[in-house]
Length: 106
Picture 1 (cartoon, rainbow, N blue to C red):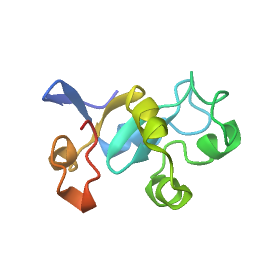
Picture 2: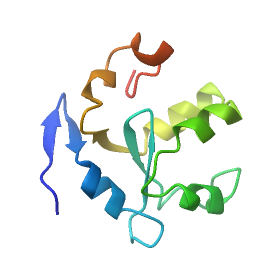
Picture 3: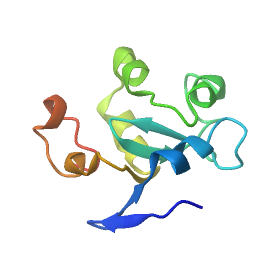
């Protein structure tokens, strides 16, 4: 397992480790705006189906996520799935000004 560090009680995850959590991993993760989210327990509840989540497992789903126009309640639900932040994206942890307000844990 790749080395992880912690910033503001959020685990910083290396790109290598994130990419290992792809579609066939027992604990698949997706990334949106630098935040890494575990989808294993949520994938069958996802209104768009599990396939779209698994298609992005181990990959950056930001463009797809933003193009759909998710509701505020969907964003709040997603935050419950947060496992960490991709290394190099720590500035998005609490900074609402980053990328037009795409704060990971705000």
